[in-house]
Picture 1: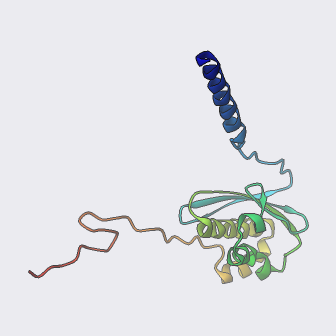
Picture 2 (picture 1 turned 180 degrees about the vertical axis):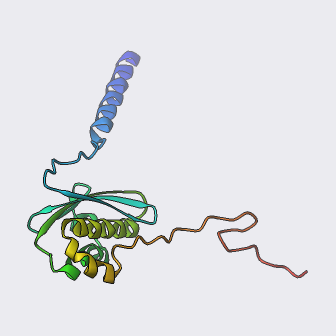
Amino acid sequence: MAEAKKTATKTTVKKAATTKTAAKKAPVATPKLNDATYATGKRKDSVARVYLMPGKGNITVNGKSSAEYFRRAVLQMIIAQPFGVTNRETAYDIVAFVEGGGLSGQAGAVKHGISKALEKQEPELRAALKAAGFLTRDSRVVERKHYGFRKARRSTQFSKR
């Protein structure tokens, strides 16, 4: 009886281990992008590698559609801004790979990358993109915590007595 219980627990452990390994995600491979224009966008701690190619206006982020990856409407609007300024909504497909930071920073990084790729593809769009401020990297990052403070600028409460 004791041996039967031991073998039963061993098989359940093996089954659990195989399901865990099957659940691991495979690394996202770069698709074959022959006629693609490549650009890198950055915002906060996020870095986006953006591939722009002629197409119908599909945007893919980390293997998912942009609406699926960025569920908030504000983030979807941020990504679409460069196309709205240049009137190229259905002219190009985008494949983007983003890592680091949160969703807001990632959306800003994708927007920056799309703008740079559009400018590389069509240099005459530079004036419109520059006027909208999409080609300038937003250099604001989180300030580090300082010694003797609770946070970056928050100090301890002062006690007179």
